[in-house]
Amino acid sequence: MSSSIIEVLFGKRVGKGLEREAGVSSRYLDSGTEDAILGRSLLYKNHNDEFLRCTEFDREGNVTVVSGEFKKNELCAKHGLMPRDLRKLWVPSIIVPHILVRKNSILVNLLHIRALIKADTILLFDVYGSTDSYTQSVFMYDLEGKLRQGSKAMGGLPYEMRALEAILISVTAALEAEMKVLQELVITLLGELEEDIDRDKLRLLLIYSKKLSTFEQKAKLIRDAIEEILEADDDLADMYLTEKMLGKTRPTEEHTEIEMLLESYHKICDEIVQISSNLVSSIRNTEEIVNIILDANRNSLMLLDLKFSIGTLGIGSGTFIAGLYGMNLKNFIEDSDLAFWGVSGWAFIFSAIICVYGLHKLRRTQRLTMWGESGAKEGKRGWLSLGNKRTVSNAAAKAKLAGRYDALQKRRFGHVIERNPSSFPPLQLVPDKKK
Image (cartoon, rainbow, N blue to C red; front, side, top):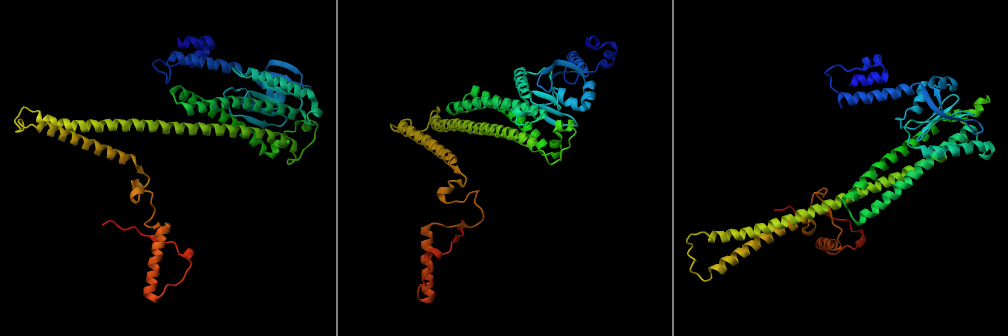
């Protein structure tokens, strides 16, 4: 079955080359499913290895070719590119954004836009299986308008910078729109979690957290791509394609226009990253608080269970005494009129003592602090104490020590030396060792 599918897709020669040896099992899937997936992947790869679909704009902003198919080798030869350069544009699985500067062109791969910018032409590559058709349509309409406005209407920017700015505007607008949607959803959900915590809201919080983390990573990659091109002075100077076409040479350090253009959109991307980071931090804090609340509720249930266990132990202790006297043996108090009341009272008192003692121990366990069990109340040192000395800052302790100091001076010198009380040095006491 598997070999017949591959033979139908690729022919007998390819099918025989890909046929699996008999008795060899798949690592993850069964043989039929894996061969079908492999066949579709190779068929798609074989088709895309030769042709690319592009939409072309001329210097005036007019669309000259709509979704036309071009051979890759022809595109490379026409625009002076290498096959590895085109791979960064047509492979849908590449999610890392790029802004690459070549000799006579600029390659841009940002979100839903994959473009080849030249001094008088721009090619937009159609990505197979893309879900951003509406965003791409809006971008193409905006790009057409900016290219038709001309250089004077755009502040004297050349053709390639107008095209690049249109791309950056579309990318940042898409990021801002997605950020606003996620921000509204997350803030609303966090507000609801403050009022009530249930399973459905926690599940939504997990979903939004994953989406927000993915969005934050995407925004960071775009910001880093712009930052990377800003740090390369030679690439910034090479982005003046119109001057290259006219035969003009530009020094490496003169790239003010393109640098200001990229810096403005870099700040926008950085702001988006900061907002998304704040939202992620809010989600993390909410998750920690929810975990603390759930732990507190769990501890309350455990304490309630312990209280019931202590009560059961106390009642069982009284029942044990009653059981001793309930044996069918002579105990020499059968004829006593006060035996019933005495045994019942003793059993009740014994049960009460057990319950009170157990609850007292449980309460002391609840009062554990960072200074140890009842450390703050009894003056004991806990596990957070450092060293063997403790500085005494209590005014009463200082006054008592000052009185002892004056008495010592009077016995030694016959009078008390006057001094400024504020200059009395801070004293350190060594706690008494337990005997």
